[in-house]
Length: 309
Image (cartoon, rainbow, N blue to C red; front, top):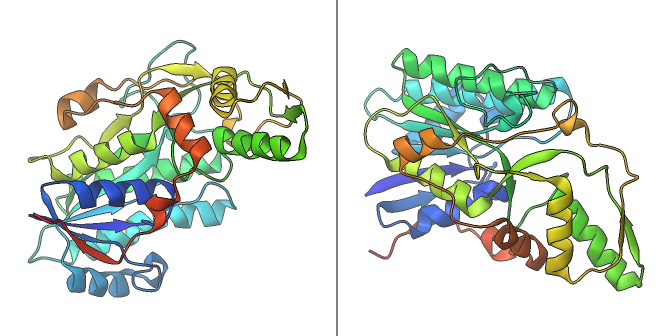
């Protein structure tokens, strides 16, 4: 039975990954430390000591930042991977696999209508995407050098229970709920002109567990998306239907920085299907219903749990 360490288990995607790990028949123990118990900012020696205490077979890295300075983003993504890679490489008597959640922001602009592949050029246009790309390269180089096994899952636009922060779905859900409570008949959004590949958070979690548990070497980068681009307008209109909202949606807000210069994004997911035997199961409506209804139960995670089997 595999022992899985989930870092960032109290965040949005990390909570889904931890829940999926606890439910998986091949996972014996799930460790979900707080930052007080294992903080990547503490450096290689401290993280290595924490890994020797927990003795994981797999580390799933779900930590990161959505915004901040270049320095903060680089530390949160590339810096975190650098510390983990060196700490894991020091565990000479116990091989560990590292699976990290990356971002489609690593690609930057792609041709309209194309499904982007893992070997396509990467030209990120934001510090967020560039910092994720640096982390991906660091892990790839470490795996090529034999320091550890692992892979980066390039997650496209995740949506689901517990979503928060700057995502379109979570922001619109908050605005619709506020408008309903205040009796208003309109909300404001950014221009709904972009197209994105929306993937359910539970599907992302299944992919992470598949990457953690599949035998043999992994491809260095694996796209995790729905394989279908949808317009931002469709996302908002579907969420409005789920919420029973019939008011006006005005597109007069500022466009988010993280979408700058990228009008279209769609994943080619064939490698995930081949390497992980994974494909998305949940629909856009399923995901947006989870956003609307909440899902705080995903965040109630004990430090250490065992599968009943």
